[in-house]
Every structure is written in structure tokens, then in C-alpha cells.
Length: 188
Image (tube, rainbow, N blue to C red):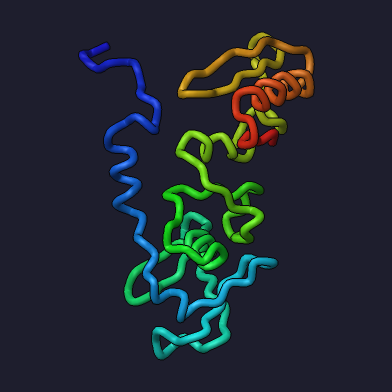
């Protein structure tokens, strides 16, 4: 319509998506191992060497940014805490471009809560943002007075049916999410 294609490409195949993502991701500096200590049980990062006069050795590095993620200023650059936790926890500078917080808590940087993902997988593991119901995947059609369920996968929305209750609609969503999203399915 209006000369613009209505077909949207999958996020992983859009040429600018990965390029833009990679521009924002800073490589982990090797010297970070000298400055930070990581506790894998808690997911917290502590300064073991001070990179600036105002930073006290032993203090937790835990500034939360506007999006709710921990970020750490190091030598004038901002690094995401979960990326540093991965690097320190796995003792590697080779950190996957996208890390998923399994429990959706952006400040929980325990290694057991982090996993490598692609853009699509990371988008599947999202909490419920449904304005019409309390259960993920269940939507209320006010004009007709019934619940229905829908799921999105590969940028396609699939109608799963209409139901008498929110719980039935949610159950249909959960079944489809398990099949389509596998380990990255989030039920609510």
C-alpha cells in the first residue's frame, strides 16, 4: 500500500537490525578482569581495583539504567552488567551479542539466569503486557463478549481460537508457545 511493501522481514534477516545492534555493543576490554570481581551465586559485580577516584574497592558496581539493566562505567564507556557477568563468569572476552535473562528480571545477572539467544528468541521471553486480561495470550473481545487467544512467531500473528474463559484462552496460548518457542517460551 502506498508503494511500501507490507511484508516485514524477520528481525534476524533485516540488514540494519544486526548492524545497529552491533554498533551499540562494546567489546569487553581484557583489563576488566583486573578491575571487577563476579559472584556467580548472586550475579553481583564488585570493584577489586578502582578505575576512578570516587569508586571504592569492594563496592558493588550496580547502577541501573533507564531501561532497568545494570550498567557499569569503565574508562569513560558504559558496559551492560549482564555482558560483564558473562565474561567474568565464563572467563572469556567472547560474549554472545544477545543475552537473555531467563526469569525476565533485568538486574538478575547470575550465570544460571543468563543464556545466549538471537533477537527472535529473546523477544519470545517477554512478560505479559496484555491490557485486556491478566493471563498472557488471552484477549477479551468486549463487543462480542468472548475471550480469544493469539500468538506471534516469526513476525506472524496466529489466531488460536475463541474461548468462554480467560483461562481456556491462556491454556491455548501456553500450548502453542511451548511448541513454537521451546525453551524460550514465557507463559506469563
